[in-house]
Image 1: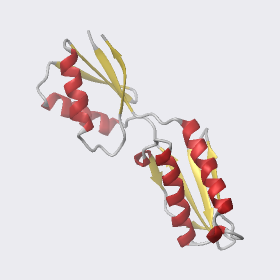
Image 2: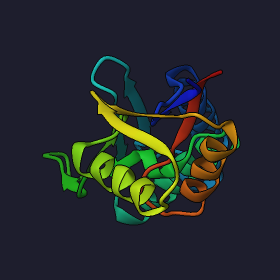
Image 3: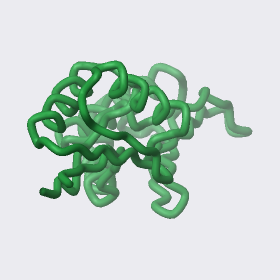
Length: 163
């Protein structure tokens, strides 16, 4: 029976490349010259740490990071921006968390959307992904088309299409 999986995955190597490009841009930009601005990436924790002199520079730093992520085909929807905090030196810092996988609530929404289509397919939640199976590939393609038109707050990828 044909099936596919709905997932939310992030290529961490591309995130690392975007961070490195952001660092290079910080080093060359005139408005950041002489000010403490840095960005670091913790692959294990899937967190990005940003440090800047004040709020205006933090905004510019996050914008630069977003631009480089988009160039690397990473959807900004996977980022959860934590509030800006002050440091003891008078600077500001921000933590950005990369969210992978599909949360249970979102997975339930996806299953409900698929069932509302009244197609002859079955959708089941498996850990942090949703598996959709059916007798006709055309029905599966209709599900993909419908989900691409929805805004669920996270980017979705459709993988493991099997006949």
